[in-house]
Amino acid sequence: MKHIRTFTNTFTRSMTTLALILTTFSPAVTWAQTQTPMIVLASGYGPIGGRDAATQFTLDGTNFQEAFIVEPDPLYALFPGTKYISCSADKMGFPFTTVHYRTTFQLPEGYSGQQLNIFLHADNAVRVFLNGTIIGEQQQVEDPINYQDPAQAFSTSYPFLFHTGTNLLDFYVTNFNDSTAFAYLAEIFFTPALQVTIDIKPGAYPNPINLGSNGDVPVAILSTPSFDARNVDPTSLSLAGAFVSLKGNGTPMASVQDVNHDGLLDLVVHISTQALQLSDTDTQAVLEGQTLDGRAIKGADTIRVVP
Image (cartoon, rainbow, N blue to C red; front, side, top):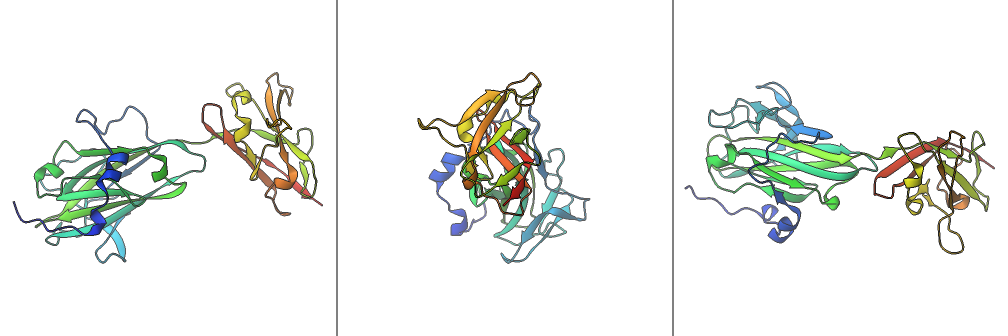
């Protein structure tokens, strides 16, 4: 076994933290999942000999460029939908060097039930970070086991590791000698917010709102044949940043009634007008909240701000 140099502090994160956030798949788990992922990321986005537009690398820690898509070595295992990528077109790396690769994915507002599954083959070894926190690492040795089946697989669902908007996956691939390349497949599962229909100031159009009013704005969350608005938690609701007003006994101002006369009971809540975070030019107000079982909901309606 060749001598392995001591790694920098970048790679010596707390193993206690790693143990708390990291779940390693059992050998029985493969990349063929029973659920359908919402997002799939795979190395080698493009033809062999080209560049991977979805994965970048840097040699100086500052300037990133697209990774090279390379022909795999005969000893490399490969899982479906991926190709090997490298920091050089001929797969030749720098001895005892770690190269930083990165890719990104997007999560929408109001998502829930997030989980990341990631599968890795690397010559010689790879560590992977989600938004700056380590979520998996291969053994840092020069051993073919790191690029042969079964693939190393990691999973995490801890909410604090994920963000609305851009999420960053970083790979630190260590080469001990000669050629270097790696392949990854990432599956991102989440439940998007349920889009609901709302009616601000039922019976009025185009929903005039006087921001100087001391009153409340009624908002109806409408039921449909596939959605029962009575399952919405009134205490979770906000409209344009303002929460549901409370009665004297501390309970939310909410009632159930058939607002649009379709035979289905709707939920009507009242929002303090002065608490609305709107400007004179706004033409839409967004309602956000959750169902009683924790599913995020989101709806919007047109408004007209009046003096």
